[in-house]
Image (cartoon, rainbow, N blue to C red; front, side, top):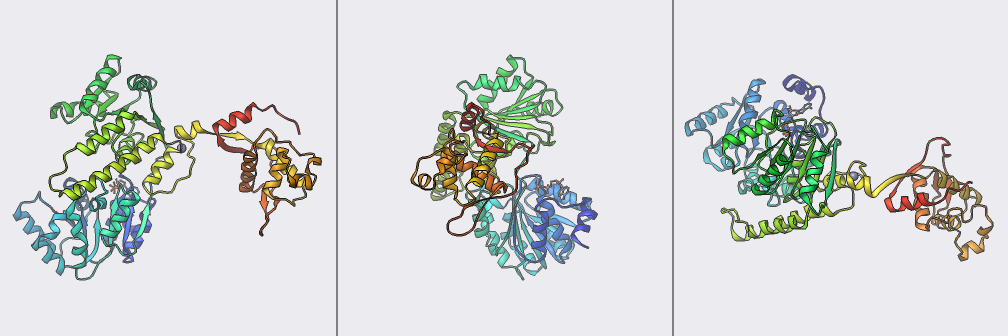
Length: 524
Ligand code: ADP
Ligand code: ZN
């Protein structure tokens, strides 16, 4: 069976999603791989298909007990013999499962990391034909990660102890470059193929506001979206109560969710939101795990979360149906101080020694700083987020507040014609500097030496600075309208002709474009 056939036969899908194929190919060829993909991108297929195609057993190491059960149920329904070994099994059930595993009855075995160290499991694994080890939630091995699990540190020794070292696939939805390094190093991956994909959500619009009055800003945001369904995240239960009361007071059908409510009420409120009896859910970060409501049109953060992983995960609950949706963060300096306080004064987890606890604190502070920098940056917000997760992104998305407000596209067709004319007049003999000086009407030694002031195009762009003219020349070089000769003193050459009817749009910083617009039009 080929991997395409396996995808079709077992999963019913016709094509792989971005990133799946290279990871599958690597694992099938015996190479280690790292798949960094957001939740829902399809990481399981990346190790389940190799598991089906490879001759031996695949071990999937996962910390999530409920996820294991779901996946195993699903696999068994698909006709794949699978089992899980974790703390939810009674000792008898566990022994039975191990016995069956020894008898070669399973193709895929999910196992909790703590189980790897138990003697029964080790003796099974060392004798078994294991073709692949998949490590799910691989960020758990890193202290930089969100939920560090010391038992993950035992995985490499376990793998090395196997009969033949199988390829190892590591998967996670959240991995900053630091965490990626940790995963590769701590899991002792061998020259792993790294694939980071799918973090971009094109239909989401990002914005950060720093309002003097958050309550007023929130009301305005919610009321300007009547009939639309949204989530408002707050950092504390108290804030949830206040914000929910405020919205209700103003006639918004809002409900709330936090860990301090009775389970019955939580359940009821969640269902009210899911079935559209309440349009707005005000909640702490306790809400959303496993909630799949596809038509959430906006996610507003009333407070800044503690890190970008949390932010992107929560914001990402907007627009699951692919329709345009907004992710807006209401930022204040107080959020930073609260975040710092929680990190420096929070109770460390009891299983950690003092040194580790201190290290984690320092790392949490750094993550908070990256989160704060997101709130303050003038750069493209999408680029900031994607780069944080290690994915390449252009510096202009055109669909975030910063792109739409700090930059705009202006029509530079007229300037382009003038520049092209100047290059032609100068006989394609001069570099970018002289062309820009001529156009700006500069009075420099070179200009005087070559009598550029006699050229008809001399000073035609004198309303622009030389930097601005150079930027336009560079833009024309990028678009191929102009070319540079090679050699130590490159001169500007004419390239492909300008089109007469399509406007030439160039992205410029906003202040500059308003300056450009103020300039009276000039005829050529
Ligand atoms: P993750 O583990 O990354 O959160 P899953 O493996 O649970 O994601 O996959 C999310 C959903 O996408 C599942 O319903 C899965 O069946 C589906 N899926 C995975 N791969 C494909 C594919 N190539 N084409 C269509 N759907 C896919
Ligand atoms: Zn942008």
